[in-house]
Length: 355
Image (cartoon, rainbow, N blue to C red; front, side):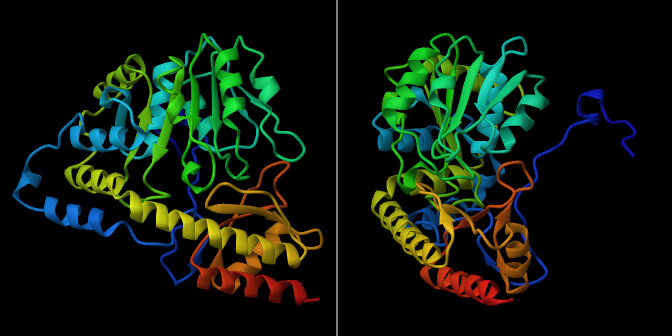
């Protein structure tokens, strides 16, 4: 029953987030959360922000947070827009930069929120197929004439990364539209396009603090772009809700961005565990695609992915399966601690030995 629903949303198919179980304790390898806690300096800053000041609205411009982000990337603060997680910022980008009468492009296998945003804002889009090894279709994205290009680097759910020279080619082939680069997982081994922002007036780079800085529960993200583009994002924000980032999130996010040593150490641990786990799974007969993210994309020639999904759940391990063409026999596995990944590999081995 959809009584009183507007025509605009009546036929919408919304995004489905990964499971957040409440009935039992699982090893959670299904939503790409960081297995390590946030920076102690971020937690200290959040605690310090709790007090009488919460009766006041937060800074709508997120000045301290934007300054910390700008310092990290070596950019001026007017090239930074901060928001309530990268999903919100991506939605703002789809509204700010893309028009219904110009077709936007993104890969057929990528973050499944992109087609949801496009449908919600009434945009026309075309999904460009990845190649047979799930590589980015750079040549097709360089044809030009589109109303916008959206790429995730590294891509999700495959974990495959794009080289900067390829991103440059896409930017230079599409000078009349925005190229939106979603770098949610870039800190785990890919090259960021942040340094290209001063060079290209059509580039927007989106980051989140949920993954590499362990703040998924705080909801902080940001976009990098030339001032004309960040002004467009402020226009969208202030037409909906000027106070999208609360005081605690601004304080914790700024401290996390400034604690470079902790961030680099935890990201390195995740990468080391990823490579060790990938090697073990290959020994067990899995195809494991090269990943520059905090997850791996795997398939086994003799076991259906959906059956492995169910078997792992029974053993207390959650992973992600996608009921979509081309990838319905693959699992996306988030990287946990060494102990969690050892338990995952042991559970997989038990399932493979079952007749």
